[in-house]
Length: 232
Ligand code: DC
Image 1: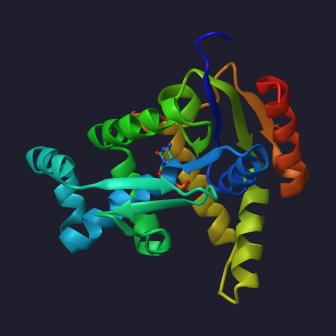
Image 2: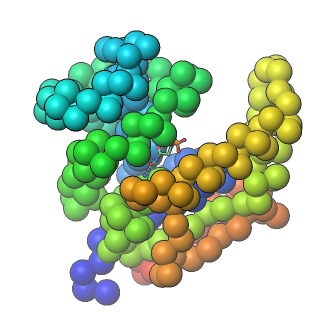
């Protein structure tokens, strides 16, 4: 195991519960938790705030993007209580990145190889210095291929749609189960078929299918795997 990094990679499709699970697993093990999707969301927010309706065009303009990548300071911090926050020009934007506008634009930003390289450098440098649980789409395949433990967390698309529907209804928001399922299927396709860093289960990743498990069961299962792997 000589060259393995002290990281746990959790990859999987949207709505599999990665963020919740990653946060809780990290808290139980006293590892830092890094939500890589939040960093792409922060990049998306930067372009939306700066370019408004022209954000898509700005991303496609190679020269402009090169300049922007030098300029903007996207970063994150993990405080002593292990809370993760994303920062844009040193301001905490953790809530601002959860709007529908950002959700609609982020895939466009995350599919850009230059943006990915910048984000990945930051993620890797953090993981070299910290024990970390990192969740995303390409953590095991691309960002931290030397992770000591790799988990591919998934669930049936219909079940992921149902969970999202229940969440929205619980918040008192209007929701249509068929529409949500169609969105889930579309996002899966986009994640799996994109040319750069597609969502993929690496051979050495352990498959955890949460279709018939609740969050607590998934968390305890991964904690158990981690304790064995890290000899904790
Ligand atoms: O998990 P999420 O919805 O917060 O992710 C936001 C977007 O970023 C989504 O389009 C997938 C993408 N993403 C990625 O390309 N690579 C990662 N490691 C994490 C997220």
